[in-house]
Length: 465
Ligand code: PA5
Image 1: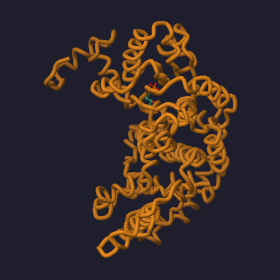
Image 2: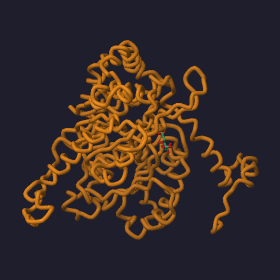
Image 3: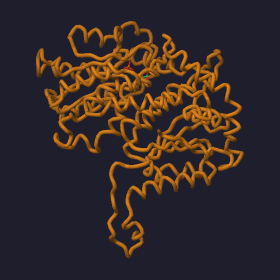
Image 4: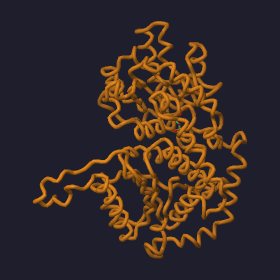
């Protein structure tokens, strides 16, 4: 199992002003945490609670269906192009970056075991999308368009561009190059899917985008690139089993949620995610969305205006030791740093015994693995010396099983934190206003009045489109 160490957030390590008396707090919150955990588990199947992501570890049939489809298209495509944004993209990016061989897209086909290269379009930068057409042969590309609502402007505009090009190049058989992942019944993409007869997978009901990584949203692109999704869900299930424990002393997701919540009360409302592994770099991006959209809320469940929300930040060890650590050590004591440490790397890399007579001679004969772990330890200890609270998540290995555990633990942690803050963790009303303004500016029917009101507020651009 992955493990969690909170001792550097404890007053015994960093003093009373900045640290918590964690054991005492576990006992203070014992009952409340037990209630939260049992409420989560007892209501997870209820429609409207948005907790069905807690069932995603248990989907034997779906695994079979996805693996069968992946097998049926294996070798047919050089590229997999995933269109999606936010929760429909970040889990995919996070896991493929962690689990596919480094530099996957420039390995040759044999080195990729006949699996396709993978590209994500999770933005609408015209230069980037146009640039894609220089590197992708669309005829040899399988396009997986993912949108739960089936209406998201960014995703659907990319889809419209690519669908048109595919149909021009391939005519009717373009449909063989498209697979959709969307709601079972609702949304424009569902209508198009049915009309065109695209192969399709479902984003289950009561699973929000940012909690959908273990649904077909993530599992399909993973299986298509050869990632072992059965092993991943095994990790999810093991973690799920462990997190059912209502005792905060034994539930690591509850512990980290509580520590974040109490640190926020002490003025430390920035949550830094800092893995010491380039492969885990995008775990931070995924976590930032999960934490921000789930916990940043204007009102609490009793309707009080509260403007709640710890701000998540991303950092990468050791790279950001040369960028952000100066601030973390000497700047304001307003952060809780989540270090992620990898137990064993897949490979070992030795530094040769050269330049031994110089100032860098001490590195010769050691491994880069040792250097990475030494830097992780050194930074963690130094940050603690500066009395800055930090916790450590130990991931034994970067593989399917432990990634399943890690992401699921962070999801449950988020749900528990939301309950402690007494907010609705699973909505995102704050993003609607900007969406409506975009519709108005893009001339969507029904938004004419808003468009008029916005006229005075627009920034003058150099190019008018
Ligand atoms: O977490 C969320 O709910 C959001 O980030 C959505 O995933 C994002 O807005 C994309 O939505 P959709 O999948 O409907 O295109």
